[in-house]
View 1 (tube, rainbow, N blue to C red):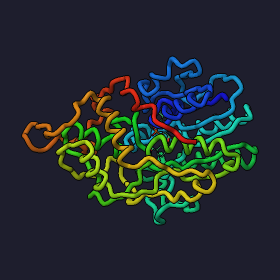
View 2 (cartoon, rainbow, N blue to C red):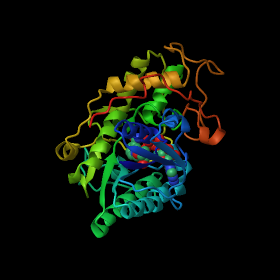
View 3 (cartoon, rainbow, N blue to C red):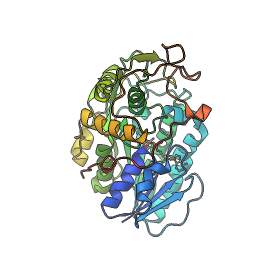
View 4 (tube, rainbow, N blue to C red):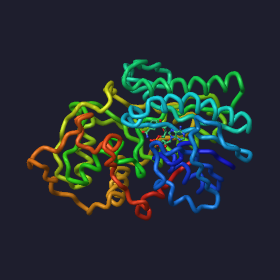
Length: 367
Ligand SMILES: NC(=O)c1ccc[n+]([C@@H]2O[C@H](COP(=O)([O-])OP(=O)(O)OC[C@H]3O[C@@H](n4cnc5c(N)ncnc54)[C@H](O)[C@@H]3O)[C@@H](O)[C@H]2O)c1
């Protein structure tokens, strides 16, 4: 089959491209690299069935041969990412989604829209089922992402109901793994990077907020099942790992797995309205798709730590805290109180090695 993956140079999209190639498909990865990185797809570039097209999907799309599947993953996804690019985030999920739906319609193909648990906002129902309508502030600091994704869901469903399109919406809950951006402020990448460097580990809030983390290979398997199963047509499905922990528990586990002695620093989140709890109800995915995650938290974190350690060219164990100017506190960003570098502001993005260690990227997927 011929498959378009928008956002294919991003964390999730690059793994999806890799798996689709492994399944024998021809893959067109369309990405404008606003938050993605060429390093993520470098191992795929020489594959004869892989084509990278640097393009903003908000603009008129290039011609494609007859397509079978369109996965629309393009969108800034981290809070600092969409705070930095609010208009781009709104446009890619609205105008971009409409363009890709039209492309899918012309090609009589199938469509999958990558929505998010953020459409539930700061939820008043816990765990979140697909029926829950959410608690979202339409003008709050996260609104450009949350509302854009809600619009993306609405326009996708409009094409299903009025155009008869074969499309589905997947609400992705926090997903992590290799190819994460250590600079984008997301929980795992942030904490692992800091622990590996022996820097203080940033915890947003008091650490009592909860999150549920899904390893990327499980998510890729779920996306493919949602696309391929006919009965998912016109459905909205939560995908994520329902194992819920406090942010403090994640921090302690990451510190232990890294073997670090980093201390914790508690700061305000970089973008306000941080949801207090987040946990998917995945009964629908289990019954409709026969899907559930199976990579344990420790296994997923260990793989991610190994990948980041190599990508950042760090030694096996960082045991001593990095001394700062006054020997105690780490420098604090003016933007968010975070000790992590904020590449969007000072251009000091952490550089990654282009090729991750063998075996770290090629994770096993199950369908
Ligand atoms: N990773 C998660 O925890 C998570 C959770 C919920 C939803 N999602 C959704 O899954 C998708 C992928 O997320 P990710 O974590 O891989 O993020 P990511 O930032 O790593 O990848 C997104 C990719 O989209 C590309 N992109 C953005 N705007 C574009 C445009 N206008 N045209 C072409 N390419 C564009 C970026 O350059 C990037 O490569 C996103 O839609 C995100 O909203 C992810």
